[in-house]
Amino acid sequence: MIETPRLFLRGWRDSDRQPFAAMNADPAVREYLGPVQTRAETDADIDRLAAMQASHGHSFWAMERQEDGRFLGFCGLKIAPERIPGIEGAIEIGWRLARHAWGVGYAREAAEASLKWGFANLPVDRIIAITTPANVRSWGLMLRLGMVRRNDLDFAHPALAADEPLSAHITYELSRQ
Image (tube, rainbow, N blue to C red; front, side, top):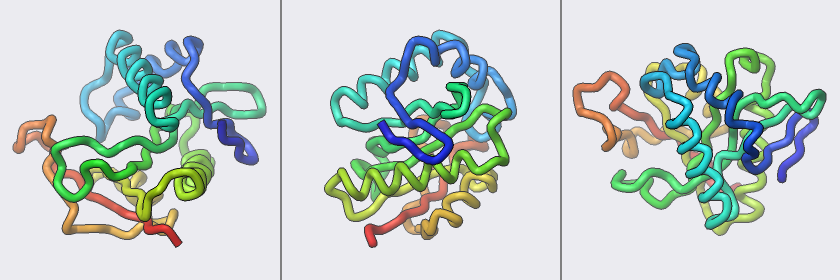
């Protein structure tokens, strides 16, 4: 679907299930997302993302390295979670990479391509990103992408208890240029 100098962002395949499950079973990958996931939970995530792609024309796409076809994680655009004032219905960019793919610029390369695709193909004036305050790597990338912190859109995640450490979320936004 989207090609960058080193990556393909594409629809999900059955062959992605095992490496995505391994990635979601890694506590370091899940540090700011919640508990590690089972294979069944990961399969359900892939099914949801594939359904989003089918119904909306975009989702968090599988990320593949061109050089060798290795699955690296995901990056892309989806509709933001419901029940969150200020961002409900917005387009959200997100990424998650396997630990072996950290630190070499894949997330930024994929995110820049996803943002470019979103503003070229979707009727939106902004794209948001959310993370937990402790996830410095993630919000650091948001800043490098030119996104701006929107303190007024920070929220407690509705799927988590208010006293859950991962409940607090911060929001960044990139406006159409």
